[in-house]
Image (cartoon, rainbow, N blue to C red; front, side, top):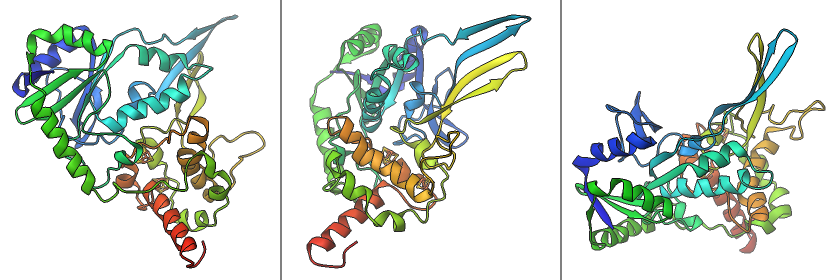
Amino acid sequence: MYKIAKKDLPALFRRIAAGKELYLPLENGGQVNFGVWDEGGSVSLDTLKTVKSPKDAFFPQSETLYTCRRDGKNLSVDPEALQEQEFVLFGVKACDVRGFEILDQVFLADPVDTFYEARRAHATIVSLACHEPEETCFCNVFDIDCAAPAGDVASWSIGETLYWKPLTQKGEALTEAVKDLLAQAQEEPVESEKNSIRAIVEKLPYSHLSLEGWGGGALEEAFDSPLWEELYKPCLACGTCTFVCPTCQCYDIKDYDTGHGVQRYRCWDSCMYSDFTMMAHGNNRTSQMQRFRQRFMHKLVYFPANNDGIYSCVGCGRCVEKCPSALHIVKVIKTFAEASKSKHTGGEQP
Ligand code: SF4
Ligand code: SF4
């Protein structure tokens, strides 16, 4: 375990940024999101949740895949270069670190997404414990411990000190590169802080949310439930929930006519949109209810069915905060739980 005084963090950032690109939570126009740090950047490590998750670092909101150019009768196709520069993502919370592991299941499965793979290979993640988890958080429901985040280096912000613990070889290498700025530290203050954080988590309103009835085996019963018809109605199909979510991974691929060629790019898409996966014959999901159901069935049933029981929600609570209709995954889980309870106690059936 190491430590550094918070007043010396700018020196630490400078040192890291001298050799690698450094991403930090930065305040810009009243919002905090991960961005590339440079001198004078307004770092906000105290912000619990960035508006968007840091998944952009691996899966950007929009990226060029390749460019076709026409020069007279000659056509050339130039694939976009893969990430080669090492970079550090600093201040990632435990839920978002798990979010990367969920994206790995998708993008690193055969056929591997080489753009994503290259970024993952060149990244070092410095996570940061959540010292003041909020009422919308429920990461513990998915066995995530926000007091002891994963990553290559874990860190804790306690008083005027940042504690630093390398967890992987990449973390050891980064630690070595900044070691003269760090001092040896005792584990005790961090262990005590972990206990305080876990005590807060225990009291959060969604901490005891039950996932009973969900999972890979719940396919038919959940899919056919009449509850979706009631639940989906306030949904505006705005897609906000999918864009702020650290695990949503749907994208579209489009061509842009540059006037002397074509740029093929991909950009995030949302299963909540009516033209999502539109094909020549139309769309497989023809109503908003079906699209709404898809999002939650994917996170709570299809994904665990195909990935050894892992849910593709990490309980970050962003959708809970951002949905303009107060409609989100917690509401879905609770509504199903209440209906199931009512069924088993002989009340009205869903
Ligand atoms: S944020 Fe809310 S209203 Fe918008 S698509 Fe998601 S569930 Fe629907
Ligand atoms: S579904 Fe909501 S709570 Fe779950 S990971 Fe996505 S944004 Fe976070």
